[in-house]
Length: 229
Image 1 (cartoon, helix red, strand yellow):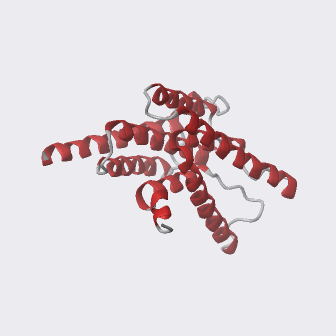
Image 2 (cartoon, rainbow, N blue to C red):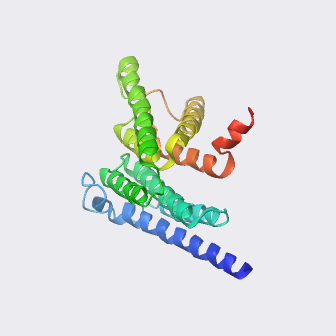
Image 3 (cartoon, helix red, strand yellow):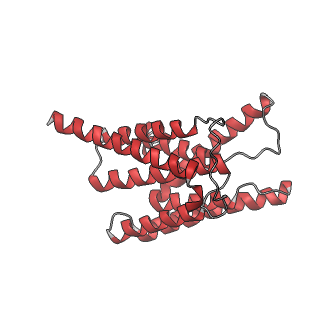
């Protein structure tokens, strides 16, 4: 039995490393397959060495290893594996190209519909959660235009949070809170260290990924509720 458990851990961790490698390969060599707005000529200048591909592979492997040691059903493990793979891919493209490709968004919606058809995700609750979460970011975007004459959030972030709401339902608001808090601390540290200014734009996808990891593995929303009960 112990050997079977370790075999499962090794297989899932290996799958995570493979998925991380595939995401890195797509972002570095074939980005135009995911977004038509990116040049079809990949950057072959190896002097511009970046740690991002290596970090992506290690990060994906670590996430899948963490999922493998949790007591999740096969369906839940599959849902979480896809969700974090999707969010990691979006984060890599957001960091590298400052955009969230529509084709990734369509992939997310398609897989969500598959889970809905298989009765793994409730249709109404997840759709309402995604819509409400996207509306909040649209409101922040509008407030940015109104107060500072620039968008408070990118439209890609709005679409991303909608997809996250489809998969996570109402817990997406806890993750949004964690992401905004982490982003605020990062922006404040950048201003204090004079690395950024008030006009600097930060990619939001990495903070949503961080918030998801915190909510999943360290401080789930139900634990927060338990503190008040």
